[in-house]
Length: 411
Image (cartoon, rainbow, N blue to C red; front, side):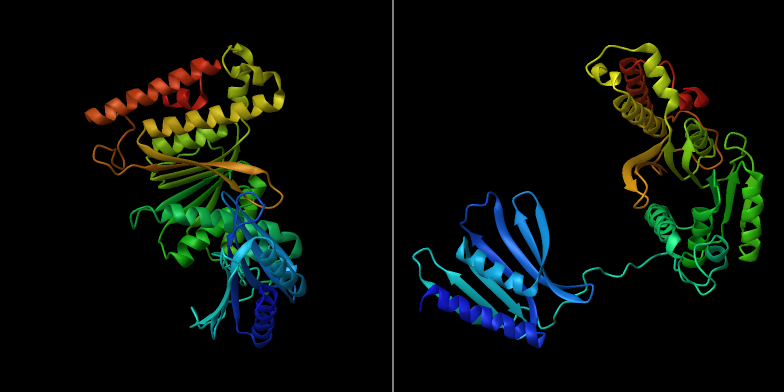
């Protein structure tokens, strides 16, 4: 029987299984066509806005491309690909697997095998997001205009609600790396209206069942008053907001220090406070990098990348990377394991950099309550010397007279 007759039979079986709900997926392989680096096509059924469609995943050597097609268009495309390079097609259903294969000698084989799976997958295209912070009837979410009294998220607060959950997801994964019972006191430096502060308190107390104090530090007295009022209405007894600057706040006994979008050297002030407190976890998302940018502009050192700084946007990005890179090195100097990664807080916010410092529990690391000082072991002393040399070389290369955090810590 010619290939086209086999293909016609194969498409008929496909339609039958689509109609009966037995369809699982399709795989096209053994590609001999003209499209460069295309290896395989995987096809599954998805439900998009109440309409069934085929999701085609085109697998290339170094990337995947996903495209959605209405069912009839998808079936036509399957036939097209089988006529233009793919030599084997496997239809998976919950009753049987059907394999249509064209051999190199032109012979066609059509096989029916026992099913690989007996359960049809979900056709949901967008899996419902399981959020750590639930949109329940929580007083703080209502008071902050995120939800109504019944727990429904306002349309104009959807982005903010996603942003809150995104931050909590990041913090939750970092907190889980710490030994049990570590978190006793949290400080959110520059807490603003307290969206994250309230959500973090909710997570620590409601989800993790921790007995810990959370403090929001905010310069604007009206924000402090507002947040303390919301905390009282929410019966968050171990949450308080205090008026003041990051620089002036006494961070003694803080285990987790957070500073999101503290402008310019305020981020350095926050890191300094965390290091001095010997906090187990320091998390900052810097904003603005004016201090180092001014240093680079002032000295105008000639180096391999100096051609970039004649363009303002490149100078700005270079200042950001150098500032945060040295911050990470300084955290390492004081015994922190550092992570620097990019995240997107919501659909309307540019990408941000998060700098994370996790206090090392290695032998020779500082104990809680000790003054910050050089570590005494030979290995740590050597590591500190190496980090200091990296900082020195970086400053010389980019023409930096000083870094604010370096000056605060007197290293």
